[in-house]
Length: 147
Ligand SMILES: [Zn+2]
Image (cartoon, rainbow, N blue to C red; front, side, top):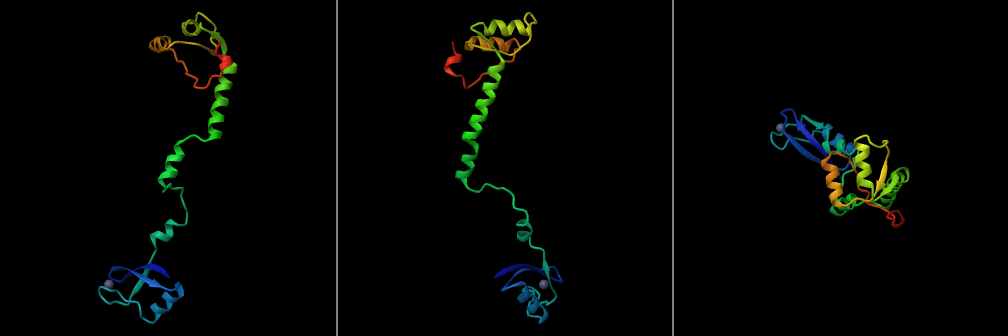
């Protein structure tokens, strides 16, 4: 069965159920399709929104479970993040506990500008932020990087 959106010459819209498009054509030719409102047999087929919509399927998440899973990073995403973090860490100079001092020196052009990494307390971090110094918390740090 297929459903066609139909309209009579007075623009009364209704649905017609047919076995096939040929069935619809045959019934139309024999005047068997008529408007339920005015009885007119002058019927035309309207382009179906449903059919048009199915031409280009778009990725729509309908399942709630799927939607929740989509926000959780997958293993490849996590390893990509780890790679980025390690890339930054490998290029940065390890200044250890001097991180806050060194970051300040770089900010005030007392030391050559370069990426650095090291340890900083929460107080250090907020103080640096207050001074307008951009720092990045790296969420993944290997234990051997901590000394
Ligand atoms: Zn009508």
